[in-house]
Image (cartoon, rainbow, N blue to C red):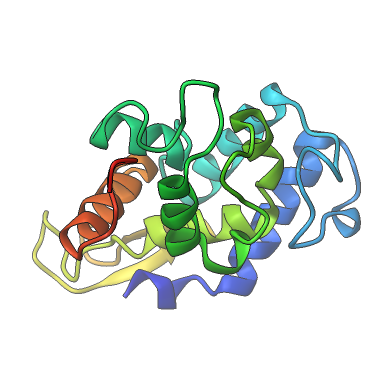
Length: 191
């Protein structure tokens, strides 16, 4: 339900603004498929700033870890990243299943340090959309199905005014990985 309350276009505009503000550039320079690092010269502190801006704007908790870090934690060291710090075939399979068209630039043997260069505004929009989509059908405080957009981009209950209890970005990723494994996805380099 929440994904209908805030349109993908509005989410993109907010991501574009957050990136532009954090990097101190004009919003017009921020395009959907630009690498935040390679094309826009973002650094690690900029990612923290961008995530903070998105969290404040949407009332969400952005992921603190990358997808492949979660794979390693949930399914064992060496599943996604080999001993030399390079992506495994399993990592590529999981990446492509999770990110679809954002994944083709990933390949087995790719250095892990190159993965952050693949983060784009489109990636951030996808993450925000997924978190917003975790809004429950009804408000746990009053039981009403009265979600509305408050403060322009935050979802709250129109009846009792409580904020929507959204799942964190890290939990969204973990849930997706557990579902992927349950559907038969590869989860170890030995598979």
